Image (cartoon, one colour):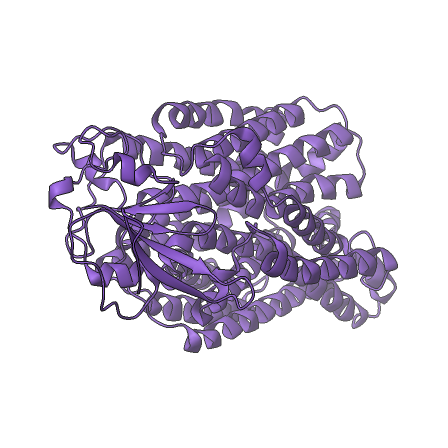
Length: 632
C-alpha cells in the first residue's frame, strides 16, 4: 500500500511505513561525508564573518582607504548574507538543495578570490558582497539539508555540532585574521578559503544526491519562482539594514539619509506580507509557519539571541583592548571563556535534547544564564582580577550555547512536518538579522553613554563629541596615549560605557526569558518529512537505506504507476508488503486531531488537501486509484 498526501500545485507527498514502526536512524558513511562537507563550508563562512575585524586597520593602510571604506568592508558581508538567506531557502524548494548549495559555494569562492586580489576598496567591497551572498546560502542550506536527512528526534546532536563549528569559526576568525595580517599578508585571509571550500565542494558534488520533488523543465521552475515577493523582500530588508548599519557611524540617527531608507524598508515589508498571503501562488515565505504562537515566540527569541550574541562578539574585544590594554590577537584569546564554552555546550545540549525529547528546559536555562551572565559583566573594569573576569565570561557563553540547539529544535517541533524546511530557513534569517540589529543597538547605547561619561570630566568635555563617534577608533587613541590622569579617565569612561551595553543586553535577554511562558512543549517524535531525501536504490541490508524519509514529495500520478514496481528507483528501503498505514500517522500528517474514517483496504490511495482561496480554510479527502472520493 502507498499513501500519498497531495498538497497545492499538483504536488503529492508519498508515505511509506507508519509512526510506530519507523526505521531506526543509522547513518552510513555517505551521510557522514555529507555532514562533514557541510561542517567544513560552515567553518569557512563563520571564519570570514569575523576574520576581517582585526585586520581592517592594516588593510585600510595598505589600500589607502578611509575609515568609512574599512567600515563597509566588514559590513557588506553581513548585510548581503542576511538579505539573501530566505531567497536561497525558497529557491531550493524549486531548483533543489544541491544546485543552490553549489551556487552558494561558487559565489563564496569567487568573492574570496576577488577580495584576495583587490588593489582598492571598491574591488574589495564587491568581493566581500559576493562572499556574503555565498555565506548566506551556505548557512541557510546547511540547516535545511540537515532537516532533510535527519529525523527530528535525532537532529539535536547534529545541530549542536554545526553550532559548535560556527562558534569555533567565529571565535578563531579574528585571531587568524590578525595573525595573517601582522605576520604574512592580509590577502591570506581570503586565499585560505580556496582549499576549505574546495574540499567541501568536492564532497557535496560527489556524495550529496537528493531526489528532486518534481521532474520539471527549467522554464516551469522559473515560472514557479515568486519573483515579485523576492524583490520586495530583498529590497525591504536592505532598506532596513542599511540605515541600521550606518546610523550613528556615517550619518546621525536623525538624518534623512538614515530615516528615509528605514521608512521605505518598513513600508516594503508592510506590502510584502499581504502580497505573500493573498496574491502569490507559491509564496517565498510560507505564512503557515507562523500559525502557532510557539513558532512566533521562538522566531522572536532567535532574533533576540542574534542581538545579544553579536553584541558580545563585537564589543567584548573592545573591553580587552580599550580597558585592559591587550593587543587585538590577545583580545581574541581573552574571549575564549565566553566563546569556547558556546561550542561544547551547544553540542552537549543537542545530545541531551535528543535523548530526552524535551527542549523547554534548555530554553529556560539558556535565557536565565544569558540574562544573569550579561548582568554580571557589569562588575568588570580595568582592575578586575584575571580569575574573576574569566569566571564571569563563562556564564553567558554557557547560556547562549544552550540556546543555539534548543531554539533550532523548538521550531521544527512546533510546525507542521511539511513546513519544516521553510520554518528552518526563516529561523536562520531571524537569528542573523538579529546580528545586524545587535551591533546597531550596542553601538547606539555605547555612543550615547561614552559621550555622557566624557562630559562628566572637565578636561575631556571638549573631546566628548569626537571620541564618542567610533568605539574602535577610540581604542586606537587610548593605545597611543602616554600614561596620565586623562588616559585613566578615558579608560574609566570606556569601561562604564560598556557596562551600560551589558546591562542593555541583560534586559534584552530578560525579555526573551519572559517570553518562554508562551512556549509550549511539542513532541520530537515526528516522522521524517522531506521533499528532498537521499536518492539511492533499494538496499534493505544497508542500514543507511533505512534513513530514507517516510515522506517524499512527487508530482502527478507517479506514485500510482510506480508504487507497485519492485525495482522502482524511488523506493525507500521499506518493503511494500510490510508497509502499514496508521490513523495516528495520518492525523499527524494532515494536522487533524483525530481520524476516524481512514480507508481499510490495502490499495493505493491519496490524501488530498483542498484549500479554499477565499476563506483560506482547507479540508482533506481520500481519493483511491479509481478516483472515488471520501471526506475525512
